Length: 341
Image 1 (cartoon, one colour):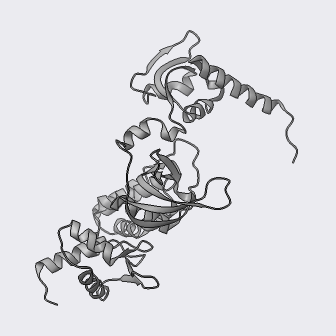
Image 2 (cartoon, rainbow, N blue to C red):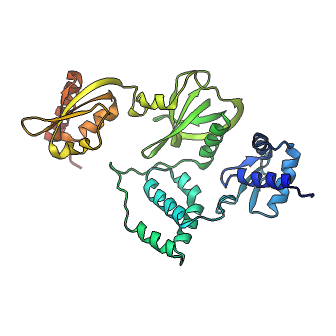
């Protein structure tokens, strides 16, 4: 093969585009990505490149199905990250600790080669490595709520969904609704992936409908990349969608919340307010009265109920009545004789 700067750059870009196992890509998909990067080559040229590069680098070809697909071996770090600095290693390891409870297990598994590289860097003898190694023992991140174990996510499903988002293409998903016995299959138009606590959601539309839906990724049992382009709803804006209360279990109507907190329960709201227009004053009995414009969602109700008798909702009247009913029902349950085993 006659090596030119153009060929070298194309091979470098090809290696960067190949995902690590269990994600895979085909020669046709690589040709599309290379064309977008300015390399106009045919599919046969890409196939020859892959065969040649697989003799030099730890690439794996999956030949049980056609078209053949390619990936880096699972334990190999990405080609364009031959090493990390001590500061980058520290950042990676702190991110691992902070995201351990939030990220799906499959995502953490994909990051393991980078974490191992970071650990090796910080166990080195360089003075900077020793100083930053000590930093890890002096910093902790504590979850603000009860930590939950993330559900398992099929690595191939996650890979297909990510690819569909990148290429702006549809994907056929097999979605198992809660309580259903069998998954339902339909084409989805991916719009975004959103991590909320321990759960990962696919924001999408399905079939020809325009209403935006949330699919819990751990409930997607199968995913297949389709050739058809994804068609987002007119004017869809992810930030507007989120701010509208989508992840607070419902759209949520704007309300003016007025609530009285005990000093111990409400003091944190002085530094981390509920909203930009929040006001705070002290009532004659010493409690803190918080007034703020918020969205009335299930998430807000759960948050308020979590304070128990340390908060009293004063307004709006409908929310006050609802909270009182919930607390009366809770008290009734606790007043009942303990259920025998």
